[in-house]
Amino acid sequence: MAELHQWQRDILILVLLGWSNFLPILGRVVFKERLSTPLDLGYKWIDNYYLLGPHKTWRGIIISIVGTGLAGHFTPLGFILGLKLATYSMSGDLISSFAKRRMGLKSGNKALLLDQGLESFLPLWVLKDSLFICWSEIILIIFCFTLLEIVLSPLFYILHIRRSPH
Image (cartoon, rainbow, N blue to C red):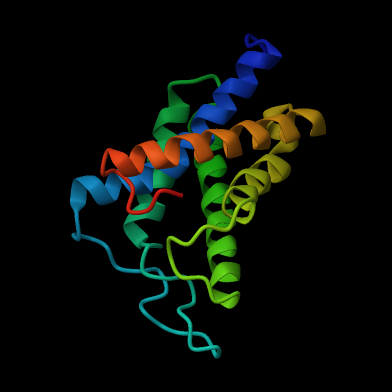
C-alpha cells in the first residue's frame, strides 16, 4: 500500500468496509429467500430471544467475505486483507446482533453506535498494523462509516433495498 497516500488508503478502507456491510443486503435483494438459512438456525437463547435473529444468514456472511475479498483483490489492499476486513466486520456485526437480542431488540431495530460501532471498530482494531493506520484514522473511519450508514440507510429503505430505514 506504499503507493497510496494516507487519505486514499483511509477512503479505500472505508469503501471496503461499506461494501462488506452492503453485500449481505444486496444478496437478499438478488436471491430473495433462496439460501437464506439463519446462522442461528432459529435457535433461541435462555432469554427466549433468537441468538442472532433471522436477518443474519449464511448467505450474507459468505457473500460479504468472498465479495469483499474479490473487491480487495482489485485494490492495493489485496484479496487476503479484503477477506480479513469482511470477516472481522461480520464478526462485529454478529456480536452486536447477539447483544441487541439480549437487550430485547428485534432484528432491524435501531441501536445507534452498537449497530455501526463493532462492525467498523473490530476490523480496524484487529487489522490496525496490516492496514498501516493509527488510532486517529480509526476514529475518523468509524465516524465516517457511521455517518454514511445513518445517511444512506433511509435512502436504501426508500429504494426498497433495505427492510428498515436504519
